Image (cartoon, rainbow, N blue to C red):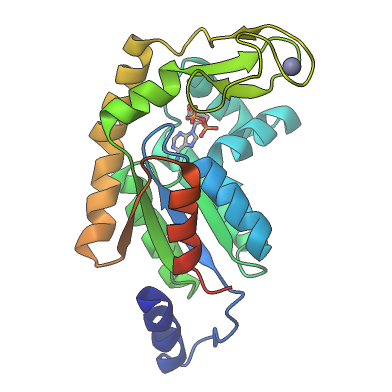
Length: 238
Ligand code: ADP
Ligand code: ZN
């Protein structure tokens, strides 16, 4: 894989820490909501033993623990807004300094704005930790709508289904516990289009940022998830 080799050579040539261990994966997963990037990142994390890092999860943990970062982030998350870049970059910096050198990382949900991508770039350069893969999981808007609007979850156990993709044996009834299958209240066409607008406004700048640097790898995320998964596993040396 091209980026991988390039990243390793640069590090070695600069006389910094040698990254010859192919277990050193440093990846960023980008993609619109419901593109399947969270699922793919989790699967890859299990397959490689590389931590799956989500800023959303970091925030939820910081809120649970209490303290100034959690307090600050909570105000924005509760309103459905993005947490300001300064706080987000700070929480990632703390994570990197504590865990970044151990087993690599797969970032999911970060960077989400151009300013975050620029700050992340500087942080990684300072620590001599070049990214080995920036992956964009591409899915068209109509398919995203179809995916989200068709989602069903069990009222009782939370199991996930989809009206056409993952059907239960009996319509409207959970296979696992017999509970009722319901639609999430915020999965309406209006809120989905709103989330997509945010994605387009902010995250497409992040996509361009990596594209201009020749670092972006696009994978077709449409259709069955096995197809995207095959393409992704082919990109990553085990
Ligand atoms: P979602 O996919 O619903 O955004 P996440 O778990 O990724 O769920 O994030 C939850 C919340 O945390 C987001 O709605 C946002 O407020 C905040 N958040 C997560 N990642 C970032 C980020 N990179 N920049 C700013 N805010 C973020
Ligand atoms: Zn159930």
